[in-house]
Amino acid sequence: MMMKTLKRPCFLIALAAPLLSGQLIAQTAFIANDESESTAASRDGQDAPPSTAQTSGNTTQPAKEYVPSLDGGGMISMSGNQRVHLLAGGTFTGGLDTNPTNAGSSSAAALYSVSPYLSMQASSNRIQYLMQYQPTITFQSGYAGQTIHIASMRLVGNATQRLTWTFALAGTHGSDSLRLLSPAQTTSIGGVPGTGPTSASYRANAGTVTDVDGAVTFRYDLSPRNFATVYVENNFDSVPNLNERNSVATLNLNYTHRVSPTLSTLGYTQSSQYYGGLSCTTFGGGAGFEWQPKESTYFSFKGGPQLNAPICKNQQGFAYNTYFTVKLPQRSQFYVSAARQAVTGFLGPGLWEDDFSTGYRRLVKNTNTLLFDVGFVNSTTLTKIGSYRGLYFDGSYTHVIHRGISAGLSFRNYTGDSGSTSFSRNLMILSLTWTPNVRPLFQ
Figure 1: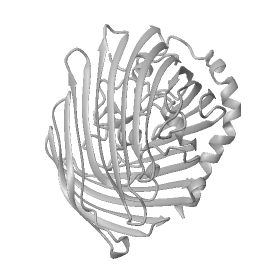
Figure 2: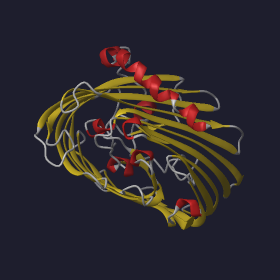
Figure 3: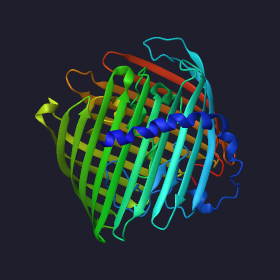
Figure 4: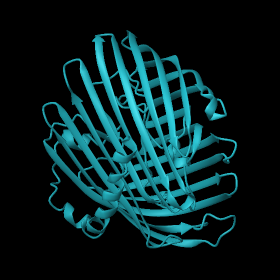
């Protein structure tokens, strides 16, 4: 079972925390300040086209691969030429938490945390590697002394001139309540960094959460204008305090035809198997398109009927995934994303979810970044389990003090309702981030 093979990385992450928490920041002195232009630009998402490894497994541009940085610093290019590149840094935060216990009413408390960051990127003639790790350790708050570990790994390879593949593995282990204190996690939305639905998927007071997601994508170019993609994913989610252990395996097959340099059409079929806490099989298919009229604008949509087996006791009816991104004048970016899809592991034993996210980012006078992100998610579950609803807002202002050193001020709000418990939480966060050899998000 894939579930068993995926459980180990999170526990290895937890074992590595004592070594990293005290020494990680000090170990960055070996990184030179005169990195090449290609290395520095690898963290810049301004000119990034749509990623070749979107969760839908669909895209029309396989030549470039961009991966969100775990420290919220933008996008990392997988097409770097360096053999081995190490990057280390960290974020120190302090601020106020109005509801540290995630209760209906609670007394405000100060919060302090540190989030070291470590990544390694390497490449060979056929394979490119990227590994990232970031824990968040709290010192004073409603969760003082607790830690959450987040790690990811991505491999991109060329088996032949026509066959390419991508392997992605991501894991989270620790108190999920700390995710609101961590650096904002981003995802690639049409090549633009955004929050995505996971920002609103928050397990308040759930205790220790282990979530592991693995995916493999194979793409075969049938001709210069036609290609087929096979996408296989398995998500494992465990919450011992709530006696939950859930997994979802998904298979997606799709065929894409490039009508013109700016327009592609596609047809797909997909199936998901829920096992563990739930037992359900869902299958369906549909069609869609990807349109990029110019480099700064991208629009994608796919959708179709999605049916559940009788054992699921409920029907999904229709599934879709769409997003729109645009790079505006004055070096600003805007995105909108919406989907009805198989539920993410953070939401527990749900069948499917409806989610929406939008965001705006702007560079002000080369050294200041202003951003707003909003995320909403609603999960539909079996009749014996309550549904889940979450709303997330993040507004922040970041100033680059010196190359690789920046200070930020953020306001975050989270409102959640899990059926039996509802609450609202506000955070005002001051942060100092040090990541050597990194350019701002915009150029």
